[in-house]
Amino acid sequence: MKELMILLAATGSLMISGIADLSFLPAEGHPVSISIFKKNKLTGTWDYTVQDVPPEYSSGVLHILKEGRSYKVSVELTEGTLNAADVKTKRNTINFHLMINGQRVDVALMVEGDTISGESTSPDGVFKLQGTRRMVSK
Image (tube, rainbow, N blue to C red; front, side, top):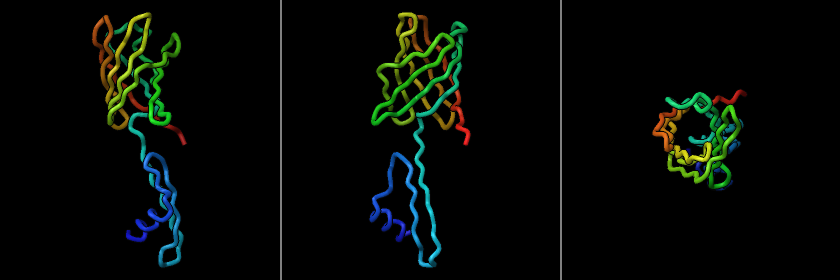
């Protein structure tokens, strides 16, 4: 373990927000490769449903992307794609708003593993939202 810590300090290859692949030769002379992954909890593609809303808004696809230090959110509906504004994150929560038919809809979501849940608030009321992360096929 001490050798690995020294190697990490010497190479400077460990990236906290990404992936690091490290190779080294331990005392036995056999190569060892180590991969360290840190998955962003919020990013991904999410299939979601919303309760008690018109059918055209009852399900869709939510895309959460991280670009640099900020996040971008888009929502795919049957009528087209909407881009979110005022995206804010804290740990495993994300808040943003959308304009739907000229009305502001505020969305507050929490991610737990591969599920997302929360609510959307519009002039028509508060509506529960839930969804699951789409798995990336390898």
